[in-house]
Image 1 (cartoon, rainbow, N blue to C red):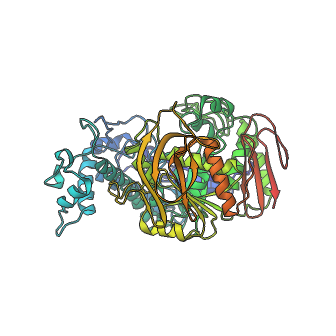
Image 2: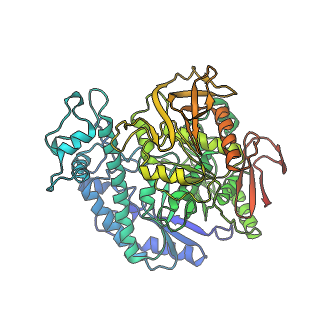
Image 3: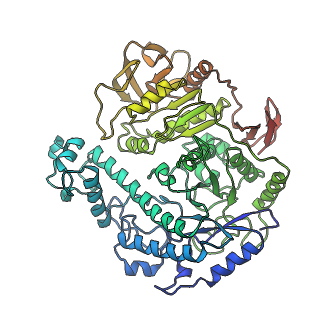
Length: 623
């Protein structure tokens, strides 16, 4: 590992059964030796808490610790993540093992970072309908709707949720069940409260481990997030951490998470989508800044698991083209990663991930990624550090908005994540670098263009901050469409001071019923009818208003396709004084403080303004 040029090694995240094969029978000797061997070679250790894989004896001790799915079925032992975040007994077991690890290795000079658990939310494990979750949810609601005593104000909850509809009023918090197994859809306010509760349970579970580690270690604490896992608020969880990391699998994600067409899946089958990884790089850079110490868009973040070859879990598992592991690594560095780690070192010859490629084959021979990592290590030795800078464009992403769209999509396939990703993709096709921003941001200094599409809840102070920012602001569709209790606000949305626009009616559209726009492009999936005296800047081919503007705030009342977004964003960039350049398909750039990176994600060479880019080509151009 050291000879290859690696500097970090993560260990221990699934090792509870080896650390404690039976209750109280602790075996730390093998881990002591592993850390000593790695440290002696000059490698730094990321030590994981093993709470994602409780051993079998844990279930015997706590038989009610399992999560329950929305159909009331237990999610049992036999793989991983078999626990409910609301189970108090399992939480205490996690505190105990974390304390033992932190006490033993907190001062170890080779343990230079920590990871809590592993991939919260993987396999749809955030939301549980267990008895433990039911009891905890009722307690959470009492705190959310406080009364004069400790029992909460059930009348306030009934009023907030609109429970008069369908005679859903409750007399006591203990009558409130979880929002599953109902005859038809449950009250959306009830579901939203449960989603917020479920997210808070993950944050509290993680915080319990972080607090213990910090008592015994000064090393930074991280967690490895995933691609397109939105069941908990990563910004809330990130506020307790020092480093955000994520697990990047470009080929594994392409078919089931990107939303790519069959043609795009074929074209990028061995390279990965040009924007999906970059979006998460920028998202987790923002999550890494959640503590507020680093400034907007400039947090500490890593790739903790970079795909090194074919994986085992996607619908299809092709091998990356030669050079792609190198490209993915440099792409992460260009977006500000402090470290890129590969998963895994040696391919396991047994169990569920035996088909998951590593840096080494199961027989120990070097695999393709080994040689590409060596290339990157050599290039890093001769390259200056990547200097980050704030982008001119900010894009707000809100986990709460994602939950609200999931609860009430109003049309098949409509999804907040896709809406935001399509805006991000359109910006990148115009050659722009983007900062992802949390919904808590109020300082937009330095941004010439800020986008908040689909941001369902917009507090008044955020509206005011955006309007006063001096930036061009793009909002809609569905921006400010609900209040925090899932009610339609009155005045009707967007109710934006200085913007005379009202959404008077809306409709969702079949996929085969796009509405053409005058000047090019179309609205697909979602279309709103707009009233008001603001300037109409975009119309349908039949003359109806689709986008309206007052001052520097533009409301877009439809889900624009790629061409519609290109035209609208190009105009907004011109108004903001931001230069754009339309890039060839599959080519992307990333601007840093001192240079511009060019990446070719195509399976063929491409001519660019800075010269020909080969397959998997990466070019650094000083600016």
